[in-house]
Amino acid sequence: MDGMDWGKFLLPYKQAVEELKVKFKSLRSELKARDEYAPIEFVTGRVKRVSSILEKSRMLSVPMDRLETGIEDIAGIRIMCQFVDDIYRVAEMIRKRKDLTLVYEKDYITNYKESGYRSYHLIVEYPVQTSLGSKPVLAEIQIRTLAMNFWATIEHSLNYKYRDQLPAHVKERLRSAAEAAFSLDNEMSSIRQEIVDAQQDFEESSIIVRRVLNQIQELYYFRRVREAAQFQRRFNELWEQDDIWGLKELSLEVQAALARAGKGGNG
Image (cartoon, rainbow, N blue to C red; front, side, top):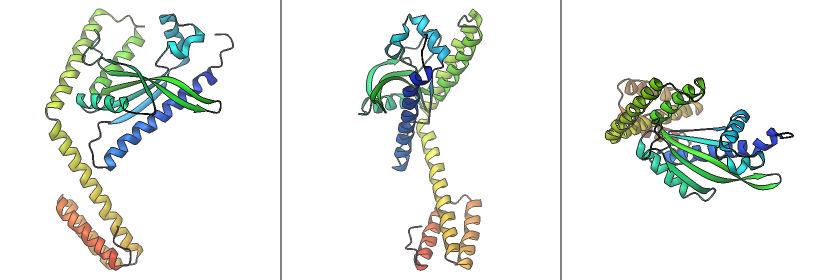
């Protein structure tokens, strides 16, 4: 460990985490922009702390000059999903990517750990472009539901508190909690379509509201004050009544008014 420049050593891992986060967030945004269902709820990432790297290297008997290949989760990405089926869909998307190489994967959902831990892990090799050229970096991608992530976060905190020596009664309660969390995931999956439909309705409503308000604001810009004020009053009434179809019709009317104002009607 003497002379180890941890700042330089961790730099490509930090770059890999930031780039992978952007790519998976962009994938989610792209799917939504195409009005497709996005199985990714949100994405987080982290680089392992030096103390954690040293502890894992000791536990796995990995020498300091073999850290890059001996410890596979120095760079970590976590992808959260709403439903268990989404996890496998995201995993398939990752397998098909050309900007990284899948090394191997572990399904801890079907084959969950004795503790109750469930998650889907993929170890990938990601090429980071540095000033010295391309550098392949290993990264671990964990894909979980929100319930799985909540349980794993609690387990991690308890393991830290008890230094990985959990009392028997705590282990048992954690296993019970893991089963309860997975039962919740299964229950949510059984009404998946209803949940997705409700979310899409809400998303569509938000888009329409934003569009109409932006269109009315543009009318003010063209000094069509009286017309804009009338549309605003109608918007307020329709919004209070939660009349989405009425708002859609109003949007078309405001768009036509913008066209008359010389805007071209793109709203």
